[in-house]
Image (tube, rainbow, N blue to C red; front, side, top):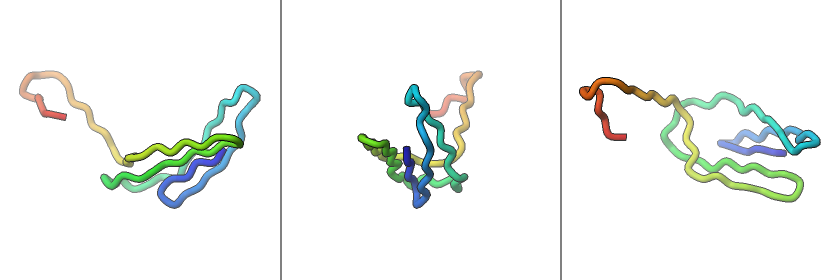
Length: 68
């Protein structure tokens, strides 16, 4: 399995059940979307509009209402 994203390309191996795990390097937060490509021996998947950054979720009082 090879995962490519923002110029980084990391490979790993699937186990007998087809499970795999790959750790990408840390990217700086960026609101500009990019394409992540995941390739296996016979298939490839491209995920568009992937962004990197922190997500803050606030909940509670009605005065915290913010459109998302």
